[in-house]
Image (tube, rainbow, N blue to C red; front, side, top):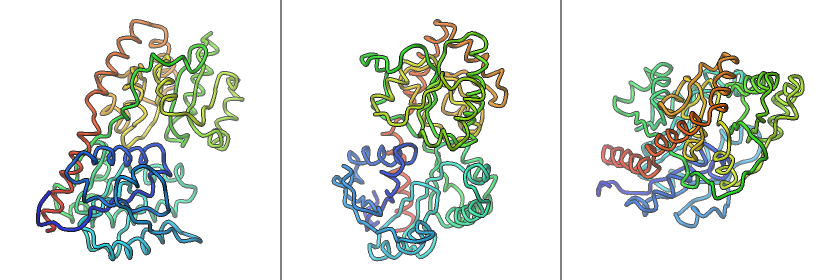
Length: 381
């Protein structure tokens, strides 16, 4: 790290325990790898409530309490947080998510991680009011123009930002966007030492149930397979309430496959690894992702994968997965039948999955992120 750059590297970690998937895993994995790097002594975590998470014992940290009342998170990010950061006088601030990054009252350079632009491309399917998407876009536009560096997990997200926010990015100078792919947690590996978590043969999906995830198509395909005599069940690792409130539970009943679908709401990392390891096929029919971490987790466990050729997913899956368009249920049904019905193909895809997953590393991601910090600190010394 440049000797002339003084002050803490403040990382906003209020999503660490609030989002066990996605952003939460990203922050947790980076912090774990940062412990072995030179920057460890300079890191300070900023969060909004007292927490006994192990990382808060490993690094210095500051609590900035979340206010009560309406728009509490916006008020915290745009008023309370900047005031607290001004008192700390950090050398750099890293906001690991694009949702509501601080954009006013910051003296230190900002490093911003942008996962995707889903609220702008799918506004009616992410938030119930278009007004929220508008506010999101305005804040993100300002943050992109202000950021000293922008980290994205895929070339797909880089292209989305250039297409939607070209002028804002160009105003901040060239070379600010760094593609740093994620990786799967080390606990995701083939777990043949664990018993089968489910009886019989099953397809597996892991993730939320927002419309862009395209799970409705997967449920209809499950019904198609049932009519063709398949015994494959569908396991959804997702919140039970979301399954009900999204209308997918009613869809499953209407398609007469409610008895073939099981929702697993709470599962340990070992339990999830066992589900990945023993599934017939991991199916991820999403129409839009900024990265697609469940695909990489499944591949790390040696699961054969079917996903779409949409957005970032071909970058993550490479040539190791069976790719489909995403909008054609019959194409997806045929792909599942082909993979699940051919043990040789399943084994070949499983081996390809392991080789593809090995190309991604959290240590490499942490080192690349630390290099971004160093470049920013050197420029702003």
